[in-house]
Amino acid sequence: MAIRNFDTGKISTELSHHGFRRAGDYGFNFHAPMQQNLSFFLEGQPYRLAEGRILMVHRGTIDLELDLEEYHLEPGDIALAIPGSLAIVNRLGCDCVVSLVTFTQMPTGEGRQECFMARCDEGTQLRIEKYIDLITLQSKRGDAPTDIVARLFDSLILDVQSLSYVSAPAQKESFMHRFLQLLTQEGRVKHPIDYYADRLCVTAGYVSTMVKRHSGMTALQWIDRALVREAKVLLHHTKMPVAEVAETLGFSTPSFFIRFFRQQTGTTPLQFRKKA
Image 1 (cartoon, helix red, strand yellow):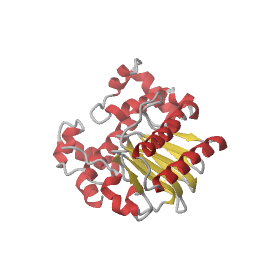
Image 2 (image 1 turned 90 degrees about the vertical axis):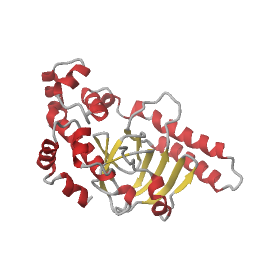
Image 3 (image 1 turned 180 degrees about the vertical axis):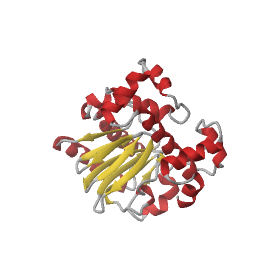
């Protein structure tokens, strides 16, 4: 059973009340206040993104988790999430104003195909604002060719994507980052530390030492955290029976999965599903 990815098409009516508009494969909402009760920004609920997103903060703060990495966004910060990434809004400031762009696929370019956050200097902010102004102007034209708007969006996405090279190069090349990327991709079914050690060409002891040093959490805790995130997505966004969720996540028996989930969250899978 496929996961019902969370996308703007499913809540387009709700979003339209907040000024969100669609233009072909793209969606946008510029300089808009965000509300905590809006489905698009519900706190603490993990989901898979059917669409990619660009989020630029103009006022307030947002705490995000993208593919297991945590980000704190302040005014001037910009985050990019690729399609298919795992996202959680951990906290949304009550006075938040953001610009949001959604897109169905990454445009062809040389930037990294992964989530990241960048702290933009004044020049970068002004450049992004120029894209926003041009897209707004073209979208208001009744006779605007759709390919012009699409190319403006692609140019904006590529420009933001290029910021990954200068945002935090040390982080992007760090052992911890590589471990989390691998865990995001394969943590659903790969649970042993030895597996990640083999993929990273190091020993299990080295993985444990480095992960603990860089994060304060053990590698096993990170693996468990990834499993809980995936379990919550499946329980909240699909109608899979608990036994099927357990099988999908590589647990030998449903009872083992139920016991694991209760130990990690304090609730059973069915209780979580009812609350969600």
